[in-house]
Image (cartoon, rainbow, N blue to C red):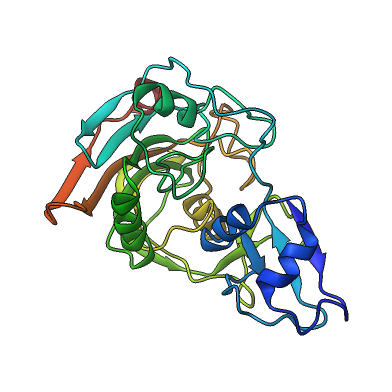
Length: 300
């Protein structure tokens, strides 16, 4: 990720014009896609291409996928929960990166999808075929993949207006006394550590997580979290913010890696949305993976 502070030369320019100067080696279509997907922010906010920069505005630009070579199809097994002519619902395993990026140029879900199907949407570019939304490498669970651009656009709109719902199981450190709760706290880039996210009451973007307790243990709690918004690392940031960090999380929380230190114990177990063609509501859910079940069994 790069961070650029607008100077007097950039002040007054449209954002898209300024980006063409800053990113002169990147195609206009790739810059536009980055803007549309919220991967280029001004003062931690998503802005339109027509936004006029002011002196001192801070532009943050997420790294573009590596383009040293084409995205190669790879025969990586996929756990496909549902598939039709418009979409795929896949259960991503823990440890699999969703798409190529810095340090992960191959062996991703995107490589596996390209091997599985020649019909995937192109809205997010060659290196993110069909990718409508993401989950972290060490978070397992359900993802929707679009097989054409119309389906992709329809599903993306549901993400934007919060009609595409996702529920996660998380094992958190500490015993939560309440049976349920709602966390409303804006999230933005951590001002000190730019690779992290943080609750930022001044510059953050709206974020809301609802949770309910599923089971309590001696020193931990299994909760189900329902996302109203979908900010980067939202559940991980929110649960740590209220004092109950996700166990195993290597970035957020303290003392939460003693029980498990192989990545956050977070699992996307349910997803629901309106089908782009039939307009019918669809809900899919999957059981906890074995490694998660084994940890819970030891706590009982």
